Image (tube, rainbow over the protein chains, first blue to last red):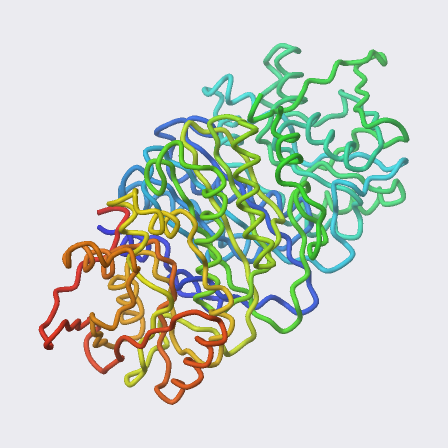
Length: 308
Length: 308
């Protein structure tokens, strides 16, 4: 099976929203009038972001999920994706499973695969660019947190990190391999939240990006951080490392004026998604002040850094 | 130097057209009203598309050039790019040279780097997504060639392929490592050309894509194909392999109604760029009929296929 047959068989579907999808020099799409475009790209590398031999359907899901999560953090509605696959070989079973996982998630969130590139490489590398739309003026930036804002976190933290240490914990493994991007939450937070980020490098590091960009500090209460249920049977130090420093959860961390608490709580009920108030933004040097039981200060772990 | 410092130092520049550039969850941009968006992505892998140790400034140029070439083939004006870099290490000299080559070409064509991703990988892999704008109704598709159309080729063919066989030929090496995407030509062909493609896999293969998508055949005269001057001192078989089968030239191959010849010729003079009339589109099964001196038929080489 050559490159062009391979693309056609597994990735070329009739264009829906797109004027031209996979198969020309470029995809061609028509953006909705008056909206702004949010664009993001994320790459997963074998041996770095996933183990060699990782299950292909989950990979297809996750590679798209991490990009949808970035769109969610800006409040953007997913529209179009481009997929770049560097593959050791054209393995049909792998391609069928990978594209199955990719399209199942894509269809759920209304994002259309409009283009891509397949190349041969000894190292499986998956790059996705996702593009969404957002009305002007309601985008949540990392730099728009203000002193006095509440700090919120969606869902629960630490599950994905636990799975790295204890792959036998099934519910944690599900979080690591098939994260659920908070797309609907992101869109619904437009006009309610001020700043937002997705938790990909770890809660402490990602909130740190908001603090840095906004020029503010934060006080967060460790006991209020929502944690994966599966963490309960592990010791406190493991829990803490996973909740504060563990990446890959793809929850949203956002700030909002305290006057919006009722709206956030109503949204939580409506979406059936836990939204936890974990602290507040304050004036001061960009730093996370973290307090545990009895008000004792907790040292904040550094975030994930690909080149350290 | 950690990942975030590295991004800031070499890739974060003040946003110009973009509302938000590098450094948030997504880039945020405002498209021009009423235009359609052309999107493309291309990945270069070490050992496959370039040799280990390839000169970084040229790589930065070429990785962007191949994407600009796809935009040119659709007649789109370049606007925004996202860069995904998988790097063995954070080598500052390499990053300075790579980003220098990238930005020099980007600025020449008015494309803004608005986002990206850097990850660590044993294998240097460069992925770029480029997005451009094009007015509705004038886009050149692969599938819009019609019987009776002229077939045109810009610039000259075979230089890049010659450099792969004879790296000592300096002018050919320049073509291979620093291809010049035909961005202005692409934009100016709007409303003149019907179908277009960029010559990345080889003239025969790329024209073949037009024929396949358009459901037509083509008659092309080998002697009319423009060839790199450096080819003249090599034997005929080398010339033919490079001109017909060599990829990486990034010229445009396009079709146009014969009534537009004067406009095409005027455009050639205005841009100072050779545009050669090499054959015509005809009714028939998608196939390239190629004729040499004295009308003898020439066998058409198959195109480049990453998985063959």
